[in-house]
Image (cartoon, rainbow, N blue to C red; front, side, top):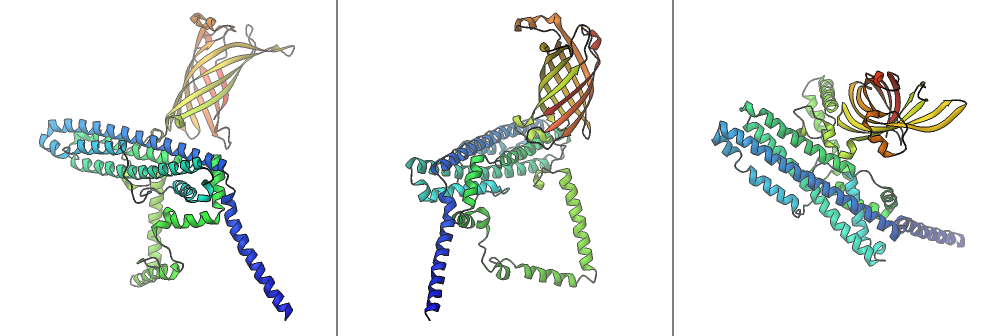
Amino acid sequence: MRKTAANTCFALILSICLVFSNLLLAQTSADSLSSKSITSYIKIVEKKVSQTDEHISNLTEKTIRKLEKQEQKLYKKLYKIDSIAANNIFSKSVNHYQQVQENVKGNVQKVGKAFSGDYIPYLDTLTNSVAFLKEGKELVNKSKELKDKVNEVSSKVSAFNNKVQQTEDIKKYIRERKEYLKQQLSRYTSLNKDLMKLNKTVFYYSQQVKEVKEALKDPKKAEQKVLALLRESKLFQDFIQKNSFLAGLFETPSNYATTGVGNLQTRGQIDQFIQTRMSTMGPNAQQQIQQNIQVGQQQLQRLKAKFPYVNNLGDMPEFEPNMEKTKQFKKRLELGSNFQTTKARTYFPTTTDIAVSLGYKLNEKSVVGVGSSIKMGWGTGFDNIRITQQGLSLRSFLDWKLKGSFWITGGYEQNYLTAFRRIEELKNKAVWKQSALIGMSKVISVKSNFFKKTKVQILYDFLWKQQVPVTQPVLFRMGYNF
């Protein structure tokens, strides 16, 4: 009897300990967040949201101004052809664009839900993490300054969500405006070129906004640390389940599999409906449906392969887009380096050109850029090895993609083939010699955190005989792009 009572008492104590341990574990991750880590996280979030907000606003204002000018040009051209049609089609466009401009510059109206366009998981997590910290009084009440900062950032994140919603509304408006003008002006063939320019503006705006949103998905180290700790917290997990965007779509009951959600059908009901319909189509109905589905999937895959950057049919381009135009300026730059060794000559020791370059991607098939190199001398032989400075070179180049990983490379260079000690010596134009280069490049992608590409070049210098001392006509260069 005593033994049974002791076992019962022990089991009760163990259960209580397990309950408390689970509660402690649930709060450990959140409690492990220090004021310093929260402050660091808030600063990063504030900076990222502010920069992205400003970028989207500038991009939208620029696009609206451009569309307004393009429509004004269309109006003037159409007015010369059909003044009545011009007044009817473009009567309200100016007022509409002015209203859009005012909305972009002014305070964005609060919306019920963000993410009405493309769902951005990171932004959802960002919003809820800040909201969780705001409601987590015990985390931020330790410092009034920290509490005020969290409240301030929470307001900025909320405003940014509204800006994202506004962007989706603007995209929808200009997409509909494009389709309207296309229908109304289809019979005026002389306006086709102007319509195409307008189509390009609409397409590039959608893709540029998408590119800006994608940049949000790159969390900093401090962000990753805080989010990792929050995700381990049971309190945060429960908060996400109740407040995230996906949780707000439907109130999912525990018996979802049998009851469904609201008035929506369950999976079992849908399967039963499909089976009933298929039974009326004959014995080969299932096979026929599967074949049709496979054909549809193949066609969809071909479209995705042709336009991998399009998520919405309304954004389908009517031209061959230059996807580099959708990227930020700094993302179109390519920093590179290369090395070139020149044979020893009577008047010139063996040298190695160590060069750096900066390229700008005009499109996916062409890169234009500039660079500079310094000539390092290694002496005249094994009995006289010494490092000396033997001149420099100023370069310009153009790479054009031929096929696959092969590129045609051309360049113009100015070479100073004499050692110098002062910058003033470089002003002597007579010492500078020209090079006109053309050749082939092989570009190999590298899976490295430091290098992105390896480039091997073979170039022919058409002006090699004009060099004094005479240099070699064929140049071999090897380099890396970062």
